[in-house]
Each structure stands twice: as structure tokens, then as C-alpha cells.
Length: 278
Image (cartoon, rainbow, N blue to C red; front, side, top):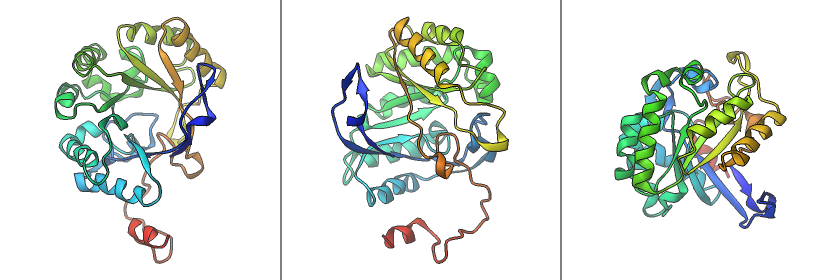
């Protein structure tokens, strides 16, 4: 994902920086979390990626662009493939990539037992939590796995994590029209996070065809939600820029329709072939 940070503004002032590339990495083939707004969940769980297969994504991407940041926000629940993800992050932090852990973000739906040991194993890493609802019952409606990780216990684990890591936690929140995007949801979320040092990332829902029962929140609702979190609770809140919809590769859209289907591009059977033909 290519950005130019100079094109945006923060606090009404031009942002510093320049062009940068962020790589979104998968940790599994498919996912067993079953989030109802995510196409990947419709695949079910197929397989864990090895640490080598995870790092290989960075190897190939580095041939195309200088990678500044890595986010584990592709297919799969990274903390359900804990050992391989830890090994991969350690490899990315070493030669030849030399990525600072502060430029690597691991996203999770809230696997509590893994969060409890993450800072010890990967100090300095950025943690993002796919919260998506401010109360347990709504969270369970759209994220069935949330039943195994009650919101109260998850927030307790995040309090301990932040106390130990002394780092911001990134909160991912998908905006679903009429489900979790009303003003009272914003106030509930602000109350839930008032004792944390967080950045809330509001994510416009990306349609996933006939698989989805949801609609995208209007821009007005998203901005109102953001205004409440910022104005009432003084929580830094951003709205994620939508990228990749044209190739069904946007957030929540990654899916393999048939694992047995052969690539249609003549003579190309693997990503190595694509790289070699650059």
C-alpha cells in the first residue's frame, strides 16, 4: 500500500514525511474466527503459514518497493499462529530487513492468553485490536469468536499489556450501518477506552458481495462518530483510507474462491514468476 503522508493534514497543518509503502501480511490461509463482515472468514481455516512463508511476503514486496511498515492484517488471526508470527517478526527485525519493531503491527481479535505474553516475546511491537463494538452482545453478533474472549477480560488484559509496554494500542473499528455506528455507540466506546492511551482507526466497511448482510456507514455517520471520540473523550481517531476495492483486495475482502483453481495467467504459476518478469 503506497501513501504520500504529505497529502494529508493533522491538526489543521500539513503532515511531514513523504512517500512510503506499507505491506499487509497474511499469517494463515483462511481464518477460523468467522467474523461476519469479513470474506476471509467464509473460507474457514485452511492452514497456518510457516515463519518462512510469512517472511517470504516481505522478500517479494521488497523487490517492488522499499517497505517502511509491516502490518499483520491480511488473512488469518496472527495470534492463532503465535510461534510462527513471533519467529517472522524477529527475522524482519534483523538483517537484511532491519525493520524496527515499532514499524511492525500485529492485529488480533483479542486472543487473551497470547496478548498476555506478547510484550515479553516481542518488546516494542505495535499491537492493534479488532474491537469493532463497544459492548459484548454487539461484538458477539458480528464476531462469533468474541464469546471465547469476553470484553471485560480482554480490556483487563490490554490494561496489563499497556502498563508493561508503555505503548499506544491501536483500536480497529469497522463501521457497519445501523449496527455499531450510532452516536450512543461512540459514547460507549469512548467510555470503554477512557483510561487507555489509544488511537482508534475507523474502517469504512468494504462490501463482500452476496456474503454480507451489512451496509457501509455514510460518511456523515463516520465523521460524527469521529467527532464524538475526539471532542468528548479526547481520543485520537483516524478514518482509514480505502484502498484495493478495485481488485477485491481491500480490508475484509481477501478470499480464495477455490484452492484448486489454477491461475489463468499463461505461464505464471507462482509469485516468483511474476517477480522474475519485471
